[in-house]
Length: 242
Image (cartoon, rainbow, N blue to C red):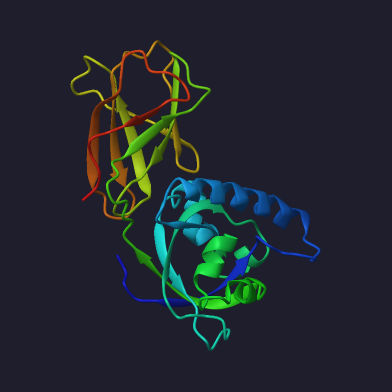
């Protein structure tokens, strides 16, 4: 995993006071604003949307990056790195023009500022920054599965949260009770949500195998989804990536 900072441009989509924003950006403002609610429950990371090369059609969701800006970009920049986690996709436009593009939440944008100059930095709108991929670290957390509210005995979908290390996933596989060797690949639904349309009643408890995208490491959350599981419920495993 690279430790070198790369120089790119970022844009801020939250807090665009008094500015006319195209429809595509208005949609992204809403998505990133939803991500801010996500970040309140996923401390210590701040959140960002990413362009195509970062979001990777959803596979980059959950990856962590350090970003920082320096006084050469804006006098309000502290030069201190901030860790952000990718939660959404940045739309076309500026995001498609840059090889790497981040749309930071207002909170993440302000976190790069000198203390007391957060609003000054946010008002810059677009900045040149440095970034590097870093391992995710969720102190005291194990991988958690939030079962989608649309799940039923024949269809199972879950949001995967709190993965240490790479943060993003290459694959998720499901094994039913009594199937000692039968792992069935799940499909990416959107973002960090994975789904399986089984076509028959799923036999719980269900085990889930996660394989990380960058390193290829795998972990198994054995029996993490219990018999009598409930749509909308969150189930915490006993494992995480080292």
